[in-house]
Length: 111
Length: 116
Image (cartoon, rainbow over all chains, first blue to last red; front, side):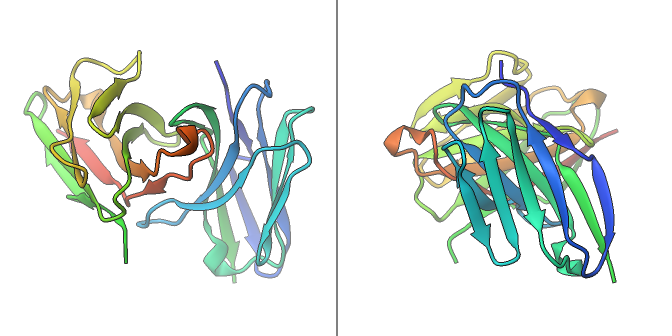
């Protein structure tokens, strides 16, 4: 059974700070790792899908890496802005049409 | 814009009173999902439809049922809500091609259910 852990549970940073958080998993027995951003009162929005060890993806100031050998993925935000405040969810594709989520990291960026 | 819509956004029901949550999509996706997220926990898949084929997760209580009358709509029925069923319920869709293993899922904004 896949288990997805995210840390920290919550994070407060100042505007302009760069930050990162972790998604860890005990097994590399999955098809893909997904990152989602979920702003309050909105729909979770897909950020990245990664499948291979060493994958790196970038979208603007946000980037992510995947290390399947050591069982983690990092999400980085460079120069955080208040609009980056959201819950960031990591999920593994454990089988066809099935996502197993972590509990998320709640990020608050203060002006 | 193509999207996933959930109604209502907030639902209050009484203990034991049946309630139905609805989801519609304009993406014409084959797969529709229902997730339950309790406070500060990970969203948990309840079931999904691949077209008309229903796939229930092994640990989804019998109290939860679903209907998909057509491609666009999917409903979550909670037959006898208990206090423990208070949660955010998320609907999602995906194309379902290429086996679905790397499919992006597109989410609605959720329905927050309160049980009194």
